[in-house]
Length: 216
Image (tube, rainbow, N blue to C red):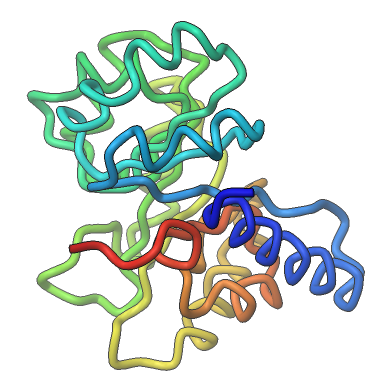
């Protein structure tokens, strides 16, 4: 058994235990974040039957996944990095989920392609960090309504907590926002903090190095 499969099984076991301990209603989806890794390092998980994969860049994803997705209809590809408007026309065809909707300009561009099957997360800037993308929580309700007017399929919220903060504080805030505005999904938690994210009802966790190893 390949190391990546062993790593995934180990994570699945920890997630299963969390689901049991917290009496969660549904099992979270594990996104294997395959950015920067070549397909020959990912293929073991694909052959094993894992479904969800995450990429940061549209061009890299096109080169890696275009042919593989045609052969594996069950694979779900997630864009977890920033989406530039000039890449939207490629992204809406390749990706099944976009986790980084962060502006009206981007919302308009995605809407212009009319792909209602595309599932979208609004990226929230909880730490109000200038260097980070995302919608300020004070503007979230207005932005969400704007997206609904565009008939975008908004399924939930995504966050990347500040590196120097306590992630649990931000995960708690995300859960509060989910309940306040009745979102279905939360995309949060990475290799270092996904178990904490599960305490606050994360439904999509984004795991890279704990599955694939360190990036070089």
